[in-house]
View 1 (cartoon, helix red, strand yellow):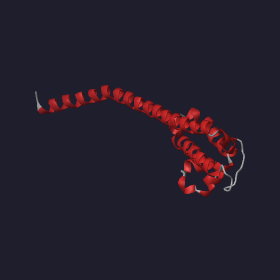
View 2: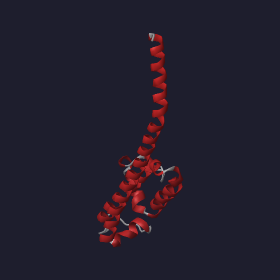
View 3: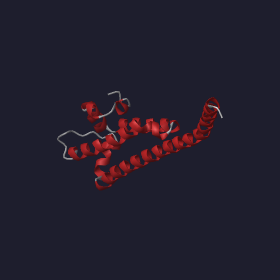
View 4: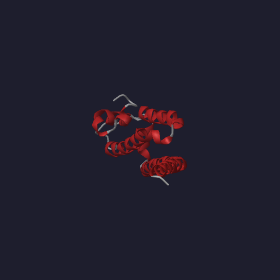
Length: 145
């Protein structure tokens, strides 16, 4: 067998191996994408659970986050409400930053959730406006801060 024929056979074999291997690579990438989505969902739910635990422990603060009730820094609940607001903003930021990992079919619902949450929580908007450097562009775009 000549060197040229050997090189030709090796080249053909390389093409066959690549053709057979490409579907496996595709499947691996698809599985990786699914794993990323699952991890994103798990992280979001864990963060939401922590936030809800604080609401259960301090239900009187709910009105400042979800019901549009404003409070001033001199209010006795201010520090706790601000801490809860920071937790919720971190949660919303997580959603905003990772929204692509939830699939494009979920984007309208996620956008509506974040926008609605920011509209209903004056302390959220104020803290975000006063501290834009602490939050991502992905979150700030929801309230034009």
